[in-house]
Length: 194
Ligand SMILES: CC(C)(COP(=O)(O)OP(=O)(O)OC[C@H]1O[C@@H](n2cnc3c(N)ncnc32)[C@H](O)[C@@H]1OP(=O)(O)O)[C@@H](O)C(=O)NCCC(=O)NCCS
Image (cartoon, rainbow, N blue to C red; front, side, top):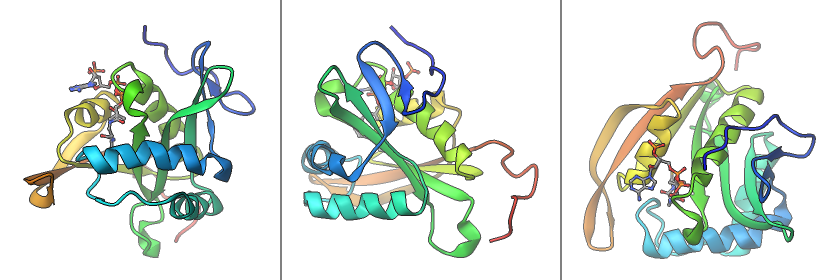
């Protein structure tokens, strides 16, 4: 069953009886590293080939959280097990890119294809807009069909395809870029110049 995004709660977005989408903390680095490691080893959604350790994931998380950007986790059940995560970070560190972000979203491999990615991305879009981003870019490595469908359904349009820029698991792989505006997009200037 698909549920729409619920009203934000003080500590997160409760999506159903068993899934809570909430801001991540560094204490979530270990399950996040485990989720990502599976996709690094077995998938083509990332072109990393060696899974980063928990400390490296914690450092990546700290960079995002310290900048005030959103890093969300989906917690399941009474134990609050992390079964997916999504974050947005500035697309390019140069100042003029301040209002453009890129998203990343990964689910535990046994939780894919059940609507959880759709829910996480909806929450991430809301949180990214709330922190001031005006454009979101998705770089879809390996042209992953689920990721393409996920982003298209969330209002992203394809803007570019880089052919055969990746190589993993013995295949040449494309990256498809998709983009969508957040909030006012480019219809109004931002509150502050970079
Ligand atoms: C991509 C990902 C986050 C999507 O989350 P999900 O919960 O599996 O996807 P959902 O069940 O919410 O479905 C989203 C859309 O993808 C479609 N979809 C899901 N799995 C699919 C598959 N294997 N092949 C084709 N389409 C698929 C769904 O039908 C749905 O489209 P619709 O709304 O038009 O029906 C998740 O599959 C994942 O973690 N994949 C591996 C990592 C990855 O590719 N991350 C993206 C990096 S940017």
